[in-house]
Each structure stands twice: as structure tokens, then as C-alpha cells.
Length: 152
Ligand SMILES: [Zn+2]
Image (cartoon, rainbow, N blue to C red):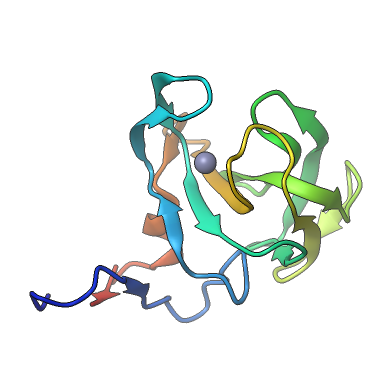
């Protein structure tokens, strides 16, 4: 890390790992507890927010089965994809491009981003639930791969 430079973090994505929001790489809110600006209380942030202009395509990062499509309170229009290790949650979508029970492959378009649900700016909320640990994990652990490199 170098000091005295703007706080812009560019994540070096691991090879063979697909980014859920092609073209949009700014993390506006990390996986962390935070003060919710609209609910006005502290709550765990069970995913990452990736900032976006409207109308961007969101893609599945793995093959799997779509287990949910539709509105979830607080998340707005949401898609959940499940493989044998994780559930992947894509929230604040403006439109949904898959059906429940559908098999998806990596890079499959699952929806688009606009402003729905409780958001104060267009962004993708992306969560990864670990089925073995039975908890939400930091999606960056998966997206950055095993080397976990971050380039400043
Ligand atoms: Zn979020």
C-alpha cells in the first residue's frame, strides 16, 4: 500500500472468478456492520454494495439453480442462485432475467440494476451465504480468489 494517494481501491480479480457486475468495480459499502441510512439503525451488512449507473447487467458468478426471484423486503427485486457450496444473492435489481428453478451457467444475465427497494443510489447488493458454515461470508473472499490480492 502506498500512502498519500486517493482512496480508490481496484480489486485484482482472480483468474477464473467472474465478477457479478461487469464494468462496475467500485465497492460503495463493504461486508461489515454499518449504520443503515434509511432504517437509521445499526445492522449487519451481509454482503457488498457495488455502485452503478442504472441499467447495467448483473451476471451469475457460478453455475447453479435459481431458487428465488422476486421482492424481498429491504432488498427489493432479488435473485438467489444456489450451487452445492453457496447461495448467491443479487438485490436491488430493476428487472429479473431468470425464472425460479432455472439452471444458470457462469456469466448468465440474471437481471439489471436500477433503484428498487431501500437504496439511496443505484447499486448491486451482492451476498454470498456459505452453506457449510451456515453464515454469510465476505463475497470478496470468493471474488478475489485464494490469493486475495488487492492493488492500491
Ligand atoms: Zn448492501
